[in-house]
Image 1 (cartoon, rainbow, N blue to C red):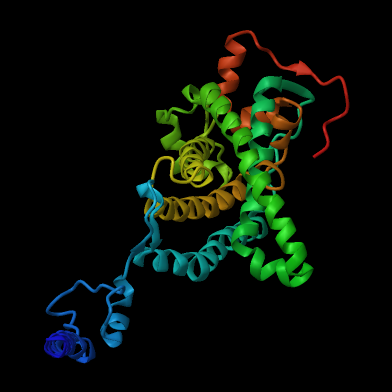
Image 2: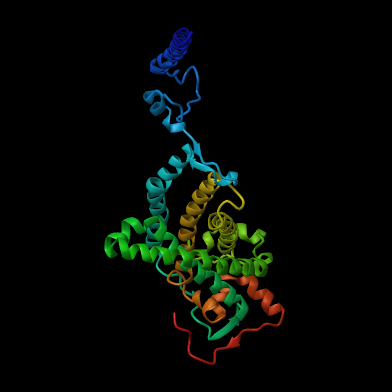
Length: 347
């Protein structure tokens, strides 16, 4: 009896073992079988790079439109890789420098040609020895707040664009890294002073910079730069008005796009910040070119112009030559020119 039970146990164990082997063979065969070829991008545009088997040639062929993200709660910050990022990198590293150079140095070349062709615009009747108050102390403070902060922003911003090719070879990578880090901090914080000055000059001078009929005549006659005629103008001529509206409009756009970069992901995602960086950099290049022209006219290009913002007053003959309508309005108000009690301000 015991021998029979022993044989039955052996037979049962053999059957169980054979069953286990039989069930394992199909599974191992399925694992060993080669994976089916991946479908081409034409039949299925979706490619899962995390799949167990991916056709590498198909994946590389569609690399330009591959996107990747990470799993974090903030959906704006999930982007790991995107096709637009390659376009932005090409613009920033390849296109931006030549564009900025053409805009800025093109303006420098035009100003040099203007100076060589026309020289300095002099006061036709000579100095009168009488002065007229043109800008108050607060107006000059607002102007210089905007002007000095812009110069700081321009220098630190140009370092972002040209520093790697112009400054780093001169001072070395370590010093350049330190300079660029502090330049970035200065750029960010000084922007608040620039915006404050921008708001002040917009509030003070917006009404006086509304275009008038005489501005059309001023433009037709070339602003007194062509020939001997000096077209009449109010407190601000048409050229100054165009600069004013450019500064206010472009300054506001530059501030908005800049703050989108200073405070990332608060308002927009990475694609929006890439657009903001492109807008900010192109506006900055145009801004530098326009302000170079403004500085030239206010210093080297025109006799007596710098005194308006330097001391607040201008020579009476200068005012009549360039802003005759404004002089007539001031005289009608009883704001008569005062004799000069000191030496003529230095040019």
